[in-house]
Image 1 (cartoon, one colour):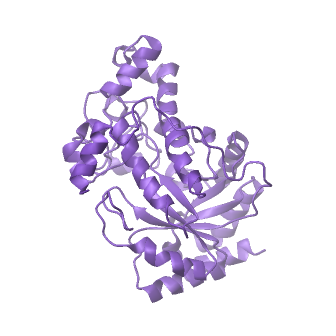
Image 2 (image 1 turned 45 degrees about the vertical axis):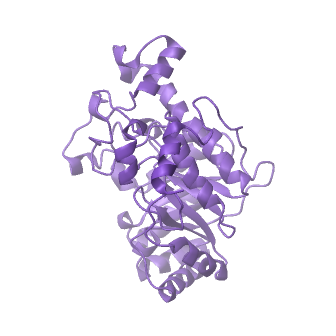
Length: 376
């Protein structure tokens, strides 16, 4: 079956995921077992693409420095870096990485963009899959902030199955440790304060052009539940039922549609998540994850390093299923001499380890400081 035919089947709901028909919920793989020992991770962006020998050197450096798991970027909303049957493929990079990481004794978690979809065929043939803001503008045609913010709607059956298919393909790799969900959310209704100047905006409240989703399915389903069309709410930003509806739409996608596929193949499910989760409708503390990787990029929130510990403590306490928290550190915001403080702050607050964004951004001085901190 070619990609065009496959997409048409998704649009017609022919692959069995109709609205309201959900898979059974899934519990974390570690349920009932002792908490895992400390683990250290590193995201690896798609821009890092050396030869096999280059990968060997990078993986050896990471392993020697104390990294246990890597998260290579395998799908970035446009192209797949693995042998996908339903996405445009750039190269089979995952297939190259897996044996090399195994030789170093490292875990590999396939990092995939979840809701943004910039695949040209999908944008063209299925605009109904995309989120719509309060002004009635589709992200397929007028995305917020940046051109790639073309988010799928978690209420749309075709969009659900499209994301699920990517998860299923990745979960079938025998040597893969887990699937890692990124952008598993709505677009930011309010950006972190440190990022707003970059886009020349001030967001002191929820503005209609950034407030999602008001597509026909979301409006219909909310009205069925509450008797009210969300577009007719006097103040949508203050309506708790409307907030909860959208939190639950993302949570339903994660818990009832995506994670069961990952666990069916005996893989770990992890996610890159936000500390200010309300602003992206991402109530991840209720998800059935095996690991949560909150992106505690303190500079984006105009905070100091101590904030990393404050957020970590809060997140450990709030995680409903007791899944381990691995605090995400943004390498460009940390000088090498600050690395031990950031790691120590996270661990003392209850983190089971940290995750670096990103491994290839680390200098020799960063790696030296990191290794000393994690091996103490």
